[in-house]
Amino acid sequence: MVSNGHPDLPGRGQLRGLKVVEFAHVVAGPLAGSLLADQGADVVHVEPPGAGDAARAMGPRKDGHPLWFKVAGRNKRSVTLDLHHEAGRDVAHRLVAWADVVIVTLRSGRLRTWGLDWESVHRINPKVVLLQISGFGATSSQADAPGFGKVGEARSGVVHLTGFPDGPPVHTGFSHGDSVTGLMGAYAVLAALHRRDHDPDFDGEWIDLALFEPLFRLVEWQVIVHDQLGSVPERSGNQLAVAPAAVINTYRSRDDEWITVTSATLRSVRNIARLLGLDEERFATARQQHAGRAELDDGLRAWVVERPAAECLEAFADAEVVASRVFSVADIADDPVYAEREDIVTVDDADLGPVRMQAVLPHFRQRPGHVWRTGPALGQDNDLVYRDWLGLGEEELAELEKHDVV
Image 1 (tube, one colour):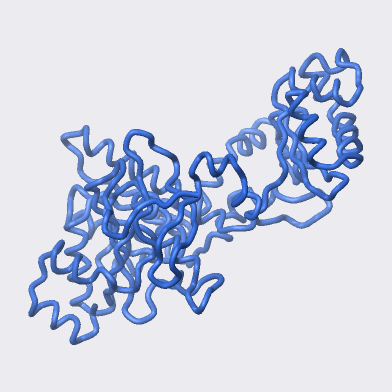
Image 2 (cartoon, rainbow, N blue to C red; image 1 turned 90 degrees about the horizontal axis):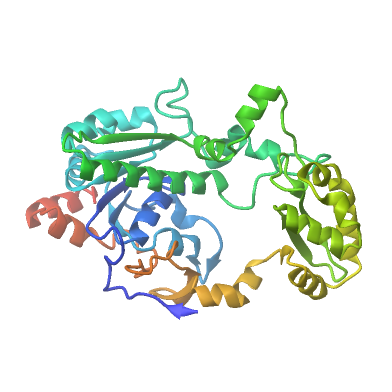
């Protein structure tokens, strides 16, 4: 556990000087912005006056303070702006002109009405990179339909593959589709910025990302298997429908711990056969190992259930078999490897005092990013962004405040 960052020390990391404005709420778009902010980008999170981003009210609370947004909004600037007012939209366009990157998650029709669609943004700032995240993509017949991450997960094929053969399809235990979309969105932004920095004819870029597409891309074998073999992979529990190894599963120990075992090489599978007292020569080739998967799986299940988890893991380590207990967050918080990696940091929060959260990942050793603030209060950075960064005068800002535009 280390303390990382101070509220007065933003702007460290690989992306220092990059200017980002996000008209995006809840998870996918803001996570893309968070990943950029973690690496030093100046990210302005635009929220409606009053309630702010819906994410501020999501999840568990302590002493009345929602915990999720403390992480989701970290390292960003919060400004309030009512885009229903023409004056608010004018300010939004000034933010677009200021930015290198614009992130939007509004429906296509609303984007056009508010002048935040690609044509409008590109006209205001021809060099800008626009990341547009939506449920079904801007070019589909469902462009104006609402979309959420769980729908994206369902459409991607991932949920169909997750769970046990005799059970229902299962979503993972977090905002999987939203989060992976945020990650791919940040990657796409950096790809566009690379071209901007190397192409003298760069004319902006429009990244059009549907919520189902990132997970669809990551299950990279499903389309070719269906196309070439005519088969539809089905749920296989923890063994995986298309497994890269002869041994992949999760087993319960005598003391009711769960242990995941995976062996992706010929030698590691032979090591498991030896550990179980089986004839290694019967598992010498990939074909033999595949044919013997059920025997190995049944043998491992019986072997693990007779022993406590610690004994199993020690034996696996001695046999050079890759295995791990299935970690809860309590295990993560106490784990020495997480501590050695400094993957959990302590940050001071104005409401809660010191709080722990994930560090900036991945680690850059030469010029690392850092967590310099938790999620800010609603509108906390209005003065900085509007006065200092956009240059709004006192009278103009007072008029906007008078009409509750900011």
